[in-house]
Length: 295
Length: 156
Image 1: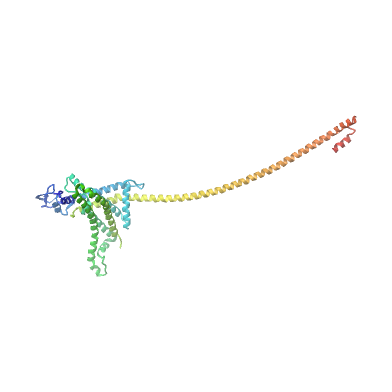
Image 2: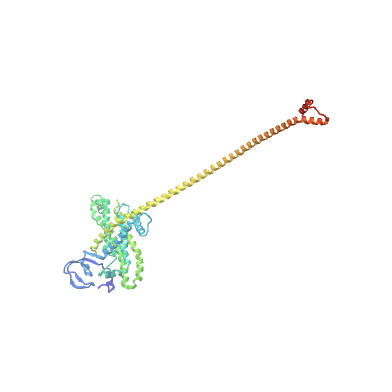
């Protein structure tokens, strides 16, 4: 199947390399992704070769490419930053130290502007989020078929190299932020304070009515709480997915002439990528600062 | 949109990288930045201090200069006064010395005159006698006319 029709091409480029557990009865695919008509006899962990297998895997599956590329980019970031940090000194900065310090100062200023508490975690967290998302999303500036070339070189059926185009990745990060928001809330207000905030706001009353309003408040507040990470993750995913989709469309329709469209689009994305990284970082800081505020 | 265990994998990655960044990246860089900030502010305040010191030093130098000028003027005046005094002294000394010399010379002259007069006085008798002898063409006895001659010499 795969890349001979535009639809197939696009679908192929948007499918992750998935490693997961297929139950018995799943159809078997050959190396080209075509169904052979047979079914798998015993549940087992395999690399999916076609959509039918991906669908059959359900939750028990890993997007190997997303995890590998995000891990690789994260590792590059922390190693480079740590190498620079080890040689950081108070003298006149030069080279890499300059640029890393610029990022640190930028993040530090953002944190100081929005977060008024004291925390050893929040500044490095913000820096990691900003740099990591920035680097991960920057991979999309490579021509889209780089991914297919890498996949072919490794003998793999699928390869989607931009991790932020995978909602698993962006939502995992935003829900980690939610975890931190809850932790910060509990640390600053106590468990009772945190649940009180969920149960007794925004509708307040005295006496028995107070408890009658708890379900309404709970529903509202839990939705509000969950809306934060969901919007945070989906915003990044949506922006990156849309960008990537246009690149793939251009490649599918124009072939080697894609650069006519993809170069301006990439230049546009030079703006979008830092902006989205910045928004993710700033919102994280804002949410955490809201969580740790005392009422 | 297929959500799956990738979500959990990414949370683990996230935790690892944030921890790593918090442990090994942020503290050294932030410490270096703080240290540099401290150094710069120290440097600036040192420069301020140096400027103030310079101002004070200039002020002091100006004052010293003024003082030195005043002192020099005073010294010159003193020297002038002293020179005048020396000149006056020298003049006075010269005047007294001159007067003394004049007086000495006058007394010398007087003495000379007196001695010449004495000599003349002693010789006048002989001369008179010789003259008289010539006039009288005779010998005159000086002893006989000594009284008259002495009288003559005394009148001289």
